Length: 171
Image (cartoon, rainbow, N blue to C red; front, side):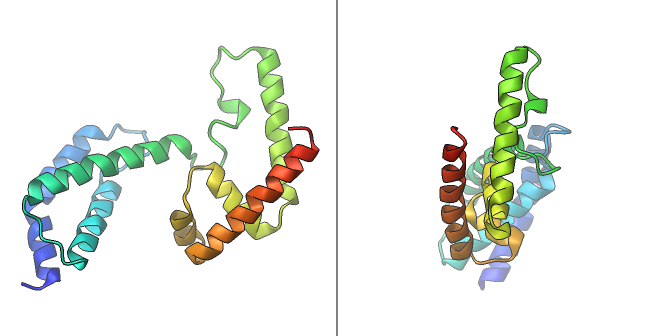
């Protein structure tokens, strides 16, 4: 059986169970959509079959892959904000028990980081912002339409320059 038919046969056989599992684990408003995770699973299965790997226990593989893909999606969702802000760096998103002094210090740090990012060349700033939001270089490449080596290079140089700028500011 060719790869495409094997892929469709396997995925069609387990899709409803996987979808039910993912729906039961994805909380509304969490930023993780079951359909997105299911799509990632399709890609993982396709890539596995593309390498001509045989699955001795496809149900077990797909369930393990569903769990790990879901965990990865939940981690990404906690790091990213839809508006493109820096989760964990934005003082407005701090817990209410933060003291006014801590809040002011973090606000100043955030402003210095933002000012340093604005001094970077546009492409370097773009990948540095994506990195601060939790994206890897492969994801950056998909989002920007650039190659992964270009994103990696821009990130390496951008972070080095950002570090130098922050050091010059005393941070």
